[in-house]
Length: 154
Length: 226
Image (cartoon, rainbow over all chains, first blue to last red; front, side, top):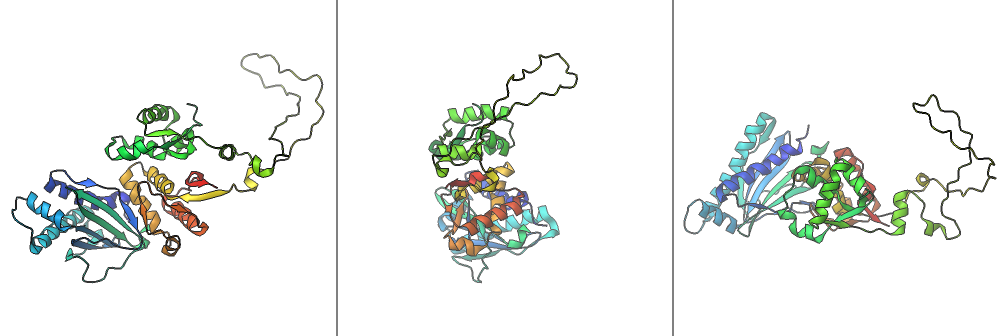
């Protein structure tokens, strides 16, 4: 039984809620798109694989500047390093996993978040379509991307 | 307002959409105005009663989020189910429905006595009745499928834009990628997509996907005029 749209949307909700907690509710959701041929990757990405009630993946990808602003919003000074960026992305995706697992329990298995910069170390299989939700904060972009297997609709 | 008016969303709506605050059912109605369907059809598709739709539509008009969309004679004839007169040629007269007078049968015990219907004293001679093929026997020509209308229709089925957009995603998971590639559709913008689908195979695939996932047939309004 595929997840209901409400359940799928929960992934986006927890992501935006956590980012809003850090930014003081300043995250702006831009119009989403469905992509058929390519995946969008920004400077840093946190990827989670899904198995069980939903098959596929979800990831958050953000520009260096976006992470720099997040870093600053947490009262850290100075330039965000690669290590800081990876830690931030790890924290963001870890929070998504924690909240999603709390809601769905064992029926939805989530992988450990995998963080990488620029492009994935291992190739990601492109599903028939991905849902891309652009997020904007202080003119910088991040993207929440959801890729479900086509069997999800059966 | 009679319900036959056709409205479309405006450039003002496009500019202000990000800041408009409405309740979900009101959004459903606003998103359903597609410049193709009448107000009555739009209200029906948005699960809003006509009486409820009227003040909301007036509000949308006042805010200039929608405007009336005039239609051509051909479009009007298609909407009313009449054949395309211009395509048939000017020698064919407009459809005239003739009734031969019939003897009235007495109604069973009316609650209040009414005067009996007047029967004609002389029956009119039979006149030749123009033969017009039923509309269903010849499918009306359809233009390209408007992707924005497909997206708006699916979104309107849910009553919540975010969830509706995920339903659109579910639908497009079922559309074969080779058909999308053949029409150079690399992405679908879930707000105001300007793509037109001209290929019949892709149109059918999208219509089937909507039917299978959303359990509803696509309305004719998603097709542009031929």
